[in-house]
Amino acid sequence: MDSSMVTQIEEIKKTIPSDIRLIAVSKTMPVESIRTAYSVGIRDFAENRLQEALDKKEQLQDLSDICWHFIGHLQSNKAKRAVENFPWIHSIDSLKIAKRVNRLAEEALSAGVITQLPQVCLQVKILPDESKYGWDIDALWQDVPEIKELNSLNLRGLMAILPLGLSKHETLGAFKNVKVLGDKLRTNFGSDFNQLSMGMSGDYPLAIEAGATMIRLGTIIFGRRRNN
Ligand SMILES: *Cc1c(COP(=O)(O)O)cnc(C)c1O
Image 1 (cartoon, rainbow, N blue to C red):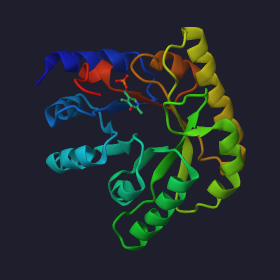
Image 2: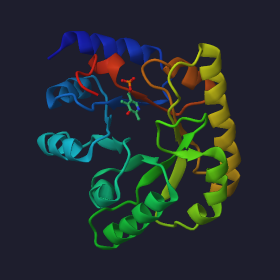
Image 3: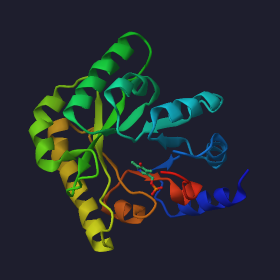
């Protein structure tokens, strides 16, 4: 058991309001690290590669109350297994994948493979960013009518990742703009569309200040990743 990780998680928890969902991003980390975080009460874990996540899930079957979150770009050919294995998908980043996940969720539910439709967030680029997936704001508004028709998705909110290199002031402003966008979209998508998945190790206090409901922390919990 890594006692420094235990201490670190306890310190982080003290700084986070209790109604904010702390998601531990365990990508590239071994299952032993997940077990340590679990022992300190963490139950939400996020992965960004499907096969890696399935391998870990398999090894952690005894921790049956873990809630798994998918946060990576989802390729079409992996959508089925993602739907079957992740109660939360934060990274719905195009109309095409939204429609596909919707159809697969409907099929998985009627086949009894899942008991609840997936909770999903729409990934937005609140600032232009060539290097990332997700909707630009205008493009998202264009797709709203079609997204609204996807009845097998629990549309829960937005996920945002900011471009690198912003000042604190710019970061806070960008997160606040995500909050404003989420509030506007709620009038279209309904009252359950109330989640903002934003904030990572380097910027989560600002995300919380702006209204984040879920923060995704990797490095600050598990230490630096070797290759990512
Ligand atoms: C890796 C990753 C994180 C965690 O980043 P840290 O800076 O290590 O906290 C959060 N969100 C997404 C989508 C990621 O891919």
